[in-house]
Amino acid sequence: MVDDIFDNSRPFGRVEVRTGVGRRRRWTEEQKGRIVAESYRAGAVVSEVARRYEISPQHLFAWRKATRGGLLVLPNEEGLTFVPIVTPGYNSTAVGNPQESRLIRIEIAGAVVHAGPGVDLIFLTDVLRAVKAAA
Image: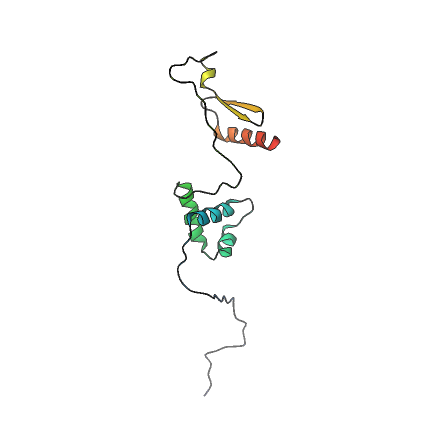
């Protein structure tokens, strides 16, 4: 009797062997944020990041969507911090031009940037990044 179930004349395709316990993993919010932040780095490929952490790319895309929706917070890797915004109180009088009182004054490393109402946010972001890089 000839057994032709196994054909050994052709090479096999990719074989992946997984070891360990086959159970669901629990990721902390911090771990998810770190993985998502890694997927957003310049030159990062989502499928490679997902493979590194043994999750599916679809899973990582769901975490990225949750981040955009504000449900997941990315870690503060660049050392960015919130700074207080000082505005005149209701009882104080604005000094100078009333139009100037509507300007936002941003001080970074000795440089001052004024932003008025309706400023293009992309342009303002580029300016602030340039000022930060020059400091």
